[in-house]
Length: 167
Image (tube, rainbow, N blue to C red; front, side, top):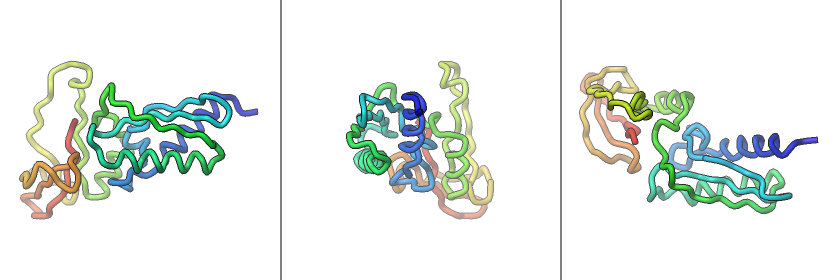
């Protein structure tokens, strides 16, 4: 017999396995946007989803994809609720998610370290090129293909690349 806790965990993993519509190399779990899932009753589930920023245009697609995958698993009533507090930060991206961003040619956000705990904000003046590893890069545009990314160019290999901005 499957306990409610085990079922919730399995459904949370299933919801988290949905690919992000803007960064399909990442699952929603790796991006850290699935905040919670709970059973409300037999065949009824509520999922809490926190978008990467308040005006994220992909939140509707993420919710629809979560609803679809859970319904396909036999849950007839799925509610996806957007939760904005506490806000999502790039610290929610898993180590695997950061690795996948790097492998896809997108410079992952730098971990905030002590700043996440309310300590001093570290000053990092360099950003590594995901193609050649050089720390000499130039900001070309504060916004790239999505609002959460900036466009940069490597001064060494001259290749442009996206940088997932720290939030």
